[in-house]
Image 1 (cartoon, rainbow, N blue to C red):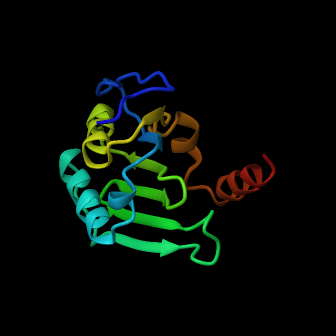
Image 2: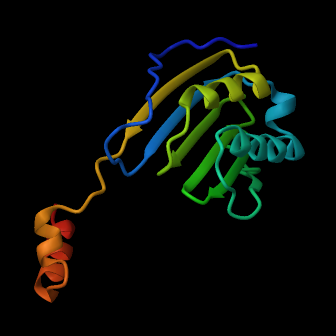
Length: 162
């Protein structure tokens, strides 16, 4: 099995305040190429990942090969919609690298994802980044003015010019 290196993995526990979501990004180097280039294996992996982090899949995963015209860009992409957002994985045939994003509004154990990748792909190195999205509770201002057409226009205009 590979080892966790190149990064500081910090466990995020279920918060006591409301957050919009949890976004884990893995930069995984040196996966077993026989496994990372096998469509059936990748499909089974993403299905098992969904179970491991206790999510609910929305439909079947899409696992497709892209970039056949350029060996440097060629690789598999796996997309699994989940009831609380998505899991997206990109595998590079040339390097055996995996770029994985797991985003969910529902809390999940980030270390379970890291361990799952290590178990299924035996990578040489995994770098992790974790983002916790801000509180999704509407503010007093948005509650007060949310029904006002002017507020809707102002919000759209302000967002466009940020």
